[in-house]
Amino acid sequence: MPVVGLLATRACAIGAAASIARRGALVRAARAPLIHHRQARAGCLSTRAEVDQTLNPRVAALRPSKTMALTDKAREMKESGLPVIGLAAGEPDFDTPAEIVRAGCDAIKNGHTRYSPNTGTAALREAVCAKLKEENGLEYSPSEIVLSNGAKQSVAQGVIATCGPGDEVIVPAPYWVSYPEMCRLAGAEPVVVTTTADEGFLLTADKLRATLTDDSRLLILCSPSNPSGAVYTKEALEAIADVVRSHPRLLVLADEIYEHIIYEPAKHFSFAAIPGMRERTLTVNGFSKAFAMTGWRLGYLAAPQHFATATAKIQGQTTSGPSSISQEAAMAALGLGKFGGAPVATMKAAFQKRRDYVFDRLSKIEGVKLASPQGAFYVFPDVSGLVGDGCVAEGFGPIADADALCEYLLEKAQVALVPGSAFGNPECLRISYAASDETLREALDRIEKALAPEVYVRG
Image 1 (cartoon, rainbow, N blue to C red):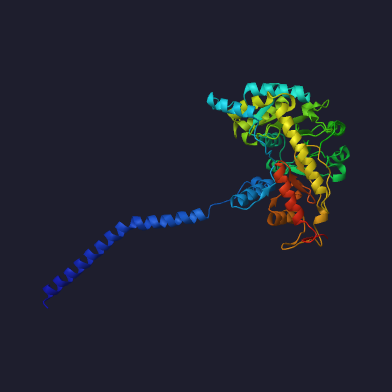
Image 2: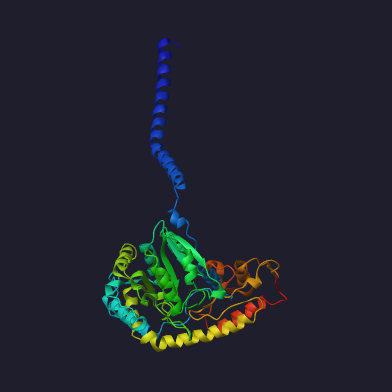
């Protein structure tokens, strides 16, 4: 081939190759955003999978509430079609009294549906002051009252406002499940002081004195008690107050949410009413238990101005004020009369009848020991005779402790109870008798059957 022709052919080939290369470059350029997008997505997915999931150590250390967990589990089982009876929740089975319901409905109709002041309406805070003066012998100004979304929030804010790292909080056991966790959330250390059935599940002045240190900051008292139903006498509280006086840093949080559910001859006394204790005491109460208003979510704290202001700051930066509708309903509740009037007296009478029935039935079961509670709506039997070495349930296996016993009764009898370990007393369990007579009868029939000697071997 002539040189010219050869050069021409090579030039054509080079041109074609260049053209192909250009087209390839254009294709790659066109595809580049898609490739980059895919790479970016992959990178995002990789980054997302590597997100630091570390939690605040105080939150990570919190334990879930066994009462809420068991109540939710029982509800789920019931919704799935199983005939489960739930006696785990601390909630009255009665409807909210009609007068209170009407006040709530009227509040909606009349436009009381806007934000409430942070610490609650002036009218309700004044009404709470009047209640505390008439029923508890306590003098407070409205500015020393902080209304919150339930007494649980009031307790938590009281603990957080007064305690921090390095502080110790004295928590008598059995205790309400949330007390120790609230202390940990505040960065304080809960110091659990075990009380026994022989002591009536009540903290003595001697035990308190032996427990206190220079780091002791707060003592939590609950009377009537959840879970035991124990009630402190005036003399027992005065003896505790004598110990408190000797420790300048020590404050007292008095949880009095069950004050109206108390059975004669027991009487309720407010710790803050003891001479010299008002300035050291944060009193918590609310409307959930006595007035069957659990879903309305309304409680309150009464405390010296300095502490009330501190809890109000916490509330102002978290939830703000409680429901305006619930506050109007609470005005009606406090208007029912002293100690809740006739509606509360009727519910209390029903609770007392149920207490007597449940106590009588449980006392006849071999291996169960219990004292008759003086308040609230729980029994807290000692079941150490039903658990441990040699205790075996047919079709279930060994029953090592009260947790296993509650698991067995939920599976076999389909009755939900709460093990005492949730309250700091692992040899006991809690049964709520805030249920209808028929429900309690059926539940106890099932429990008796599940613990009958032919299917349940005691150690």
